[in-house]
Every structure is written in structure tokens, then in C-alpha cells.
Length: 389
Image (cartoon, rainbow, N blue to C red):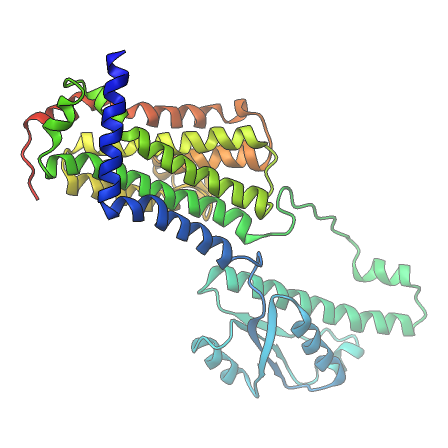
């Protein structure tokens, strides 16, 4: 059992390195905690509220003023100004004072009452995609409600019953069911991708950094000597404390979002534990592989940074992978965060069995095994390479 004793001594040595080097303390504990609380508090309300919109009401009747009040009562929209004409409202959008405005031309109410189908317009800025989409939804809703309310009054004056009015105004009634996230809570589906993605970034970098600094500070031969030049024993001893620390961070994050903030998780606690374990080990596997591929501290950390940043785009949360070009769809399989996100969606968010995500699970397992491809190259670098800044 000599190798266990060697792993123990190398682990103690690694703990001393972690204690002395402040980079580990910041990158493994402080920054991940800041990221967790930043994103969960940033979108605490689930959706943006009281986004500024404007009104151009050239009709200025009780009916159009009622429309303005209804729009202002919506949770996501807040009428901050009333403009005299279209150009004034357009300049307000260009100056980023409002996200959109409703344009009501003169004679709108008279045409409504005369059943002559007036036209009202709404304009919104899609420079900020989320804000533009939500404001557009409110402006479209208020336009529909305005015509419906006047139509209801006219039909009621003509003697139609409420049931007849409802059939005429809304011939098709939509029964909407939003699965898993009925609140359309941005915190639930953005935080669960962004936070693990950034934690993976720190794991990538620290994994490559911890090996590269052995070469940089000339301690690589001492490190291997403590394991009788057995690189596998040396790697196990080095990464054991890092793995435990990152697992504590990931499991703490999962407990906070799923059991304190009550994010939906149909898969149960064991699936969360398995997913967290695969996340940490898969990210470490990629970080080690990146250093073995290019045994240079600078180059390996650059690869890790690039891959982590691209992972957030290629995960498929903000833009679906199935909508990307075929080469990008194939490339998405090379990012650990993509497989993490798919397993989370299938097994945790929707509660389907792991067999439904077996291919993504196998892909994460492949990332864990990646260091085996470069383990001898890392040993050779530790024994023979000279550090070049």
C-alpha cells in the first residue's frame, strides 16, 4: 500500500501549495461564490420588470387613455413619458431612454366605434433581445385588448350576450401549458447554465495552472520523485484536494439553487450529485488534457480560456444547437458544458431517466478519461522540459 502513502504525502504537499498561493484561494473559492450569488441575485425576480416604454397618443380620448393606463399596469412595462409625435418617440428609443412606444393616431376611437378598423402601431428596440421581446409582448397584448374592449362595448350595445361576444372576439381560445418552467423565470434557465459554465472555466484554468507551475517553479522533478516517478500517483495526489474543494463548491451551489431558491428539479438529489461529480471530473480531465496537448503554462491556459468562453455559446441555452450550421452542431460535442447542460435538461429539469441522456453521459465520461491520452507526455515534460515564459 506504498502508493496510498505517497498519495497522502503528495496531497499534504498540494495543500501547502494551495495555502501559500492566493490564486487558488481566489479562483477555487472566492470567485465561484461571487459568481453564484451575482447571477442568482441579478435575476432574483425571474423577469425584468418596469421596463421604460412611451406613448404617442394623438387621439387623446378616454378610450386611448384607458389603453395607456392598462399598459402601465403591466408588470414588465412602465410608461415613463408621453410624446407629441412619432419622431420624438423615435429619438427617445435611439437615445436608449425607452425600449418601445405605442403610436395611436388621431381618430382611432371614432373609427373603432364606427367599426372601420383603425390602425395603431407599436415600435420596439431589439438591440437588447430579452427587453425587446418582452416589451413587444406587452405592446402587442395591449393593442389586442384595446380593440377587444371597444368591440365588446359595441356588441353589448347591440344586444349580444357575453357568450356570443366571447365567441366573436376570440373564436379560438388558447390553452397554454409551459412545461417545467411555467413562470418563464429567466433565473431558472440562465443561472443553471451560466454558473456551471463559469465554474468549469475556473476548473479548466486551475487544472492546467497547477501542473504548469510545477514546471515554472522548477519543482516538477521533486513532485514526481515523491511518487517514485509514477505520474498517475503524482496526479492523484495533486488533484485530490482540488477535486474535493470544487465538489464542495458545486454541491453547495446545487443545494442553494435547488433547495433554498427552489429551482425545479424533477430528477432528485442523487441525479444532482452524479451530475456535479461528472461536471468537476470532466472539467479537470479537459484541463489536464489541454496541458498535456501543449505542455506550456501560457498556451494551455489560453486553450482552456478559449474553450470555456466558447462553451457558453455552444451549450445550446441561449441559441439552440439544432438551429446552428451542421459543422457547429458537430463541434458542440467537443464542449463539456454542452453535455452537462443536456444531462441537466433531460434528467434534472424534466426528470427523465439517465438512459435518455446516455450519450451525453458517455461523452462526459470520455472527457474524464482524456488525460490518459497525454499522461506520458506530461511525465516527459515534467522530467525534461525547460520552462519558457
